[in-house]
Amino acid sequence: MRVLLVEDDPGVAASVRHGLEANGYTVDSVSSGTAALAAAASEPRPEIVLLDLGLPDIDGQDVCRTLRAESESVQIIVISARGEEIDKVVGLELGADDYLAKPFGIRELVARIRAVGRRSSVHRIAPSMNPESARQQIGALLIDRRAQRTFVDGNEIALTAKEFALLSFLAEDPGAVCRRIDILRNVWETDWYGPTKTVDAHVASLRKKLGDPSWIESVRGVGFRLGDAGSGPNDPEFAKDVAE
Ligand code: CA
Image (cartoon, rainbow, N blue to C red; front, top):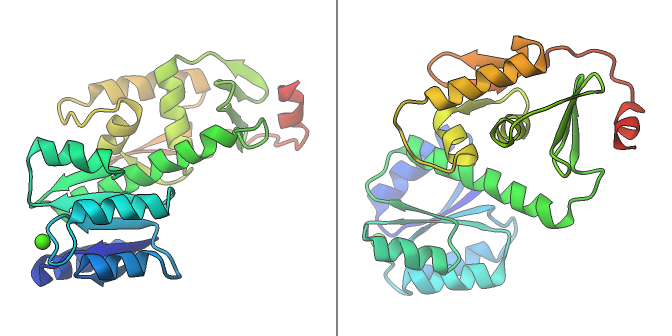
């Protein structure tokens, strides 16, 4: 994933760049608003822009507004030392997707980038969601996001809204580890770092309903991963049958 970092403080820019590259991101770094707008408009275009608001030439808010006007799909995360709530609100009103106050850790930043990416993929699917793209088959598991229905081996299982949201979230990238905090953010829409027993309770009931605990694997100290348990008969006609 290509990230455009807009930051005029060379020390901050170097450490963010280093941290993101260590996490597998491709980073282009610029130190002014003018350079940011030029870089965002040239190929290959960045998917994510990390935007410092205090820039030497153009006000970061104007940069943000222009970036959003020129692209609806680019993800913008405002990073700023201006930690006041008003900036957060203004940033989001200008079209930013998230806001991170300095100083921040690289883990926190990576978590935000992932969360923003997930939200955007959900939003991108929604308007054009058709019966074909809304259905996802993972082994014996079929998730129909449009109808909010779940099937294992063709048998529908009844999930609560939260269980369905949790399963959908884990299924966005089968096999990838989902951190508890990302699950809380995306499924419960909270940054609450308190007891995560809520997540565990829902995972437990989801496992029970799916009929095989190995569908959802615990990754100690990190979170959960959707496995490919019960990879039973994967009849290509299966999805079609279920739709009817
Ligand atoms: Ca600055």
